[in-house]
Image (tube, rainbow, N blue to C red; front, top):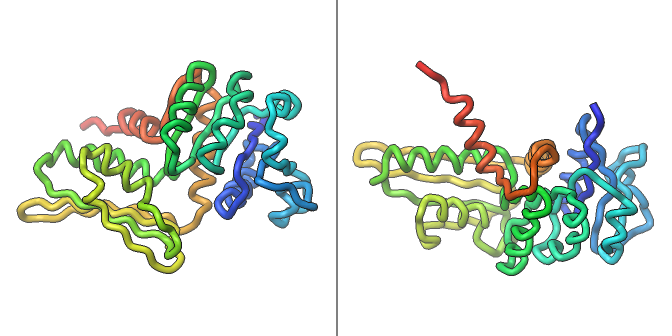
Length: 253
């Protein structure tokens, strides 16, 4: 099977973990990485402790329309910042699909991302882990089964995370809840934990998802990349993909 060539935007703490997951996947090849600044080490694989060369490092100033022609890939994975959507317009013009895992978009940048869907496949999921999106789908199903349940959301993250979790906001939105029903906890080095509590008259149901390692984001991005390279132009989400898989796998009694 021919490998999927991936270009990665963002090489911070999460980006490095994602890069390492891509490098170790047998179906994927990390063609290049774009970070804010270049450095003496030329390849991401060397920076991550591997002896082979994979994932040549470029700085953001290299992102011109010519860059994507000179360094073609099958899909771009974006773990950088909201404004980066303006920097890979040239790639979408070439029909290169993108997987965006940006948790907080400025409205104008999000509108621009969605506008690309007319030219290429755009896979957008603020939290790209499989588990969180399974949680989201199950929560919606449970709400339809028990529409009168009281629902509260608790999100727990590392001590220095300041903003309310974008995933928690998305959960509230899909369940038709106000964001005031989100309760935030900041402790230690917690990667990410989301809990939905459904209160019924004589019982309580708790749905919990916890990311114990940031590698979960890399695995989700790889899952999305393998899917989106086969799709026509349009908007796709992990929630949509998981919903389709649920429908296909519902047991018949």
